[in-house]
Image 1 (cartoon, rainbow, N blue to C red):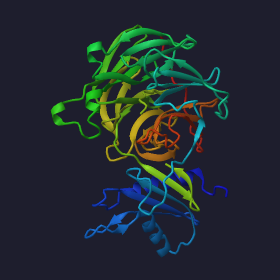
Image 2 (spheres, one colour; image 1 turned 180 degrees about the vertical axis):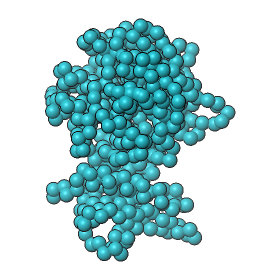
Image 3 (cartoon, rainbow, N blue to C red; image 1 turned 30 degrees about the vertical axis):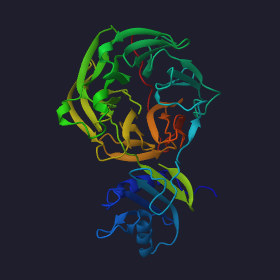
Image 4 (cartoon, rainbow, N blue to C red; image 1 turned 60 degrees about the vertical axis):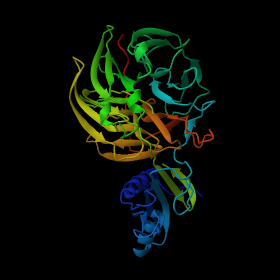
Length: 453
């Protein structure tokens, strides 16, 4: 049967089901479920699971929404979305919850452990990304159709001498990347994968506690890279004891003249740097969550959709920069001075602490909206320039890591993902492969900038 639900309806279903989950009353199971029905008349009707306060018997979210719809006089429905805190394998009503949504446009020969750092090169329409947890680490280069994004043949895979978490092209230096590897900054040769070490940031005696993570290039061609405090990260989201003190992860800036500056501190897991279109604000995101959010979309009973990459990104006009702290579950905004490269006026831009999933890598569109990969929640979330959540794009991979803009008109979103094995080590979804999305609303981005050295 042909699909009768539009992408906009699917996104609305997902968002409303997730919001409905917040009203769940589940003192016994502690398992919140929200549901949203779409009627043939185009109305969205929500419900949440409710457990009886005197004995553990209740009403599941799907039946709650259905009962509300029937009482209102509705008899026919196009679709239902269900959102949960965890993946139980089945909802309280027994509805299966397969991973569904936008599937991968390109499957790697072997699923990546942790795909990260995608960048698109317009001159030859190639997509570049890394698998930083493979042994040895890998750099993938894939030709894609500049209009549709479709894969052209198989990716070329380079084996690297150390784990790389982020990489960008260099101005006037074709065939060379600047990259953040776990201990420092290097150049990488595109043909051989050979490193040229530029700066060691994490010395040998600190490597058990720290590593570099995500990064980005600002409007003057400076390379920024964020750090992970591994000991603080090991406590998990919301579990860092007061006795630990301030997390010790830093954000660094490496200039084309070879100088290195410490720009900020206090991060558990530095991630997702991006600049606003007015070039005056910087936003930084980072998080690590122990929960996930499953959104299952069904049509006539048939599953259709279920709704850690650490990245720093800037955009064309450089007034603001945004930074994620993944384990802290906060996106910070800073005022940004393009000429000096300084940041100031740090404030919380998005508070993710009540949400599920981990804000990971992100990019910004030309309107200033943030497109954030949500690890452990199977979606790309879109936030407005005011920090309000606008929509979700569900993928068939639980662990969405990092999106990037590409294509001839910069109107395609490519995204890396990570594996999602079960307890036996078997893959349960399409994690570890590459995804592609073309926004129906005409949203566009721009090329990631290149290092000026």
